[in-house]
Length: 146
Image (tube, rainbow, N blue to C red; front, side, top):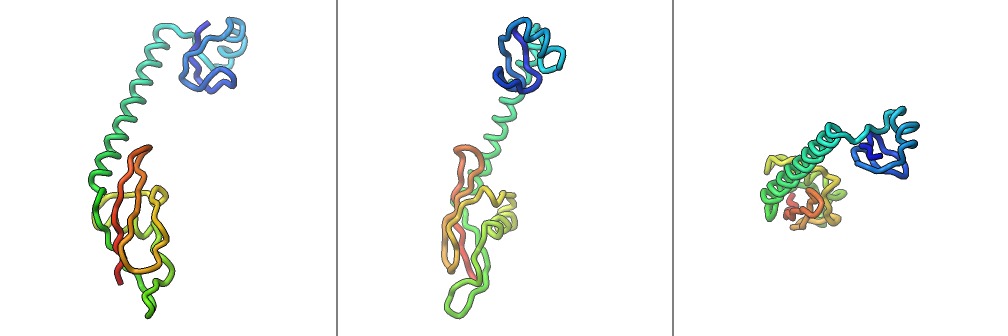
């Protein structure tokens, strides 16, 4: 019997999948516990529409990430920091400070956890890589000044 799973079922599939199970297993376990519904035309059309909506949302996320990457790529962000007499910074410039500088100068909100940057302990220019989506990254230049 073909059923559409309403919950994850160990050994058979994840929520929203169409799977083939034995008639007894479906009638005695899956259907009474509301873990699945019989795969009739209405259940299959609902499954298809859910998959199309999921694909549409994923495409929108990818388009938004590409647009953000185009805005960020090659831009320079200036971060101000305090330093001692020898030119070394007090502490270091963190990804949180870089994300705030991006928000102020470019008006783009970036999650600091998706940013990879080397330790910044001196004045100068550094490159930061921002992972916006799987396979979509943007590189910006971080300029540290006093």
